[in-house]
Image (cartoon, rainbow, N blue to C red; front, side, top):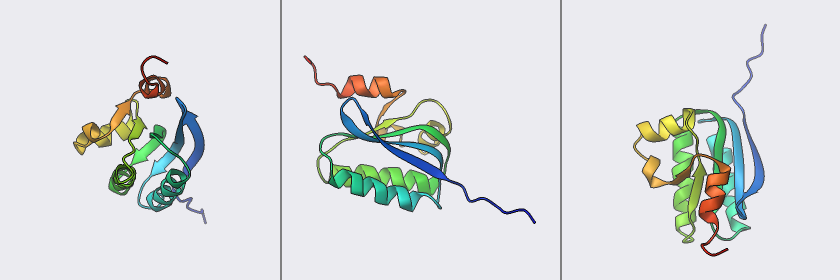
Length: 123
């Protein structure tokens, strides 16, 4: 008998351009989205300013994952804080584009591009 391994999502707290961030790798789906929503909310409570989700390492994103991203955006908006996505071409960007929500987020193709956008002019 072969054991079936559940899809996994790995996260890592980091910084992008001085902003608090979470790097995601693996699958953001109905099994992992609730955990991400909880992690984002906890991280947001202990930080200020823009918040970054780095989707570069995602290999899969379904509608539950998409809902988690939209929920994170709404949660931050209640605090008048922007949610920035690092989202290069790939599975996550394709889903955001197909769902017509890509323009809902401040999206950058790399952590470096997001960091450059987060640095106020003149610094």
